[in-house]
Amino acid sequence: MLIEKRSIKNGKLLGYVYDGITYSIESLELYKQEKQNEGFKKNSIYEEILKAIKKGIAKEDPTFLSRLKKQKTKELKQRFLESLKKDYVTSVSENRFYSEERDISKLKNAYDLAIAAGADVMKVKTLDGRIELSVNDVKQALLELGEYYQSQLQKLWDLEEQVNKAQTEEEIEAIKWEN
Image 1 (cartoon, rainbow, N blue to C red):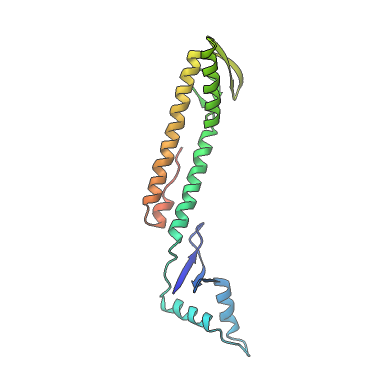
Image 2 (image 1 turned 45 degrees about the vertical axis):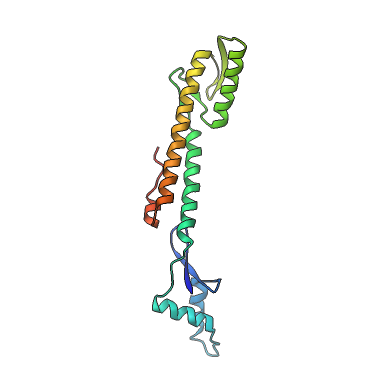
């Protein structure tokens, strides 16, 4: 059986797989050119491949769609992480907060310690430097940061679900992370 081998980046035909061996387009073209030389030795495998191509009986790469889906999922996860690296301004301060999961966890731990210590205010590290906020303001900032994180995570899950349901290359390519 002859199977097309395509690039997951652009869908370009790279070659063919025949009996588990990949033959590149370049090697097939070179073989065709060599056929015109004197003293040419026929290669029956290449001849079979070229005949099958001519007859149009090459099957599509069965792994192409799954490889494309894996690549798209990886791309979406990267966009998710990039969305968390953006500055996030809460309603309690004009300072920009970190919104990655580990940063929210650090802020939550500091908040928990401040509550346990009975503090009314606490120092918080933001992208703009260290500031002092009331524990109530930190609680509100944590809620907003958590909501933002969860909204981005839900967006990732929704897009991953679309990728998994996609049946064609065009459907997969149409799935985009919109800010």
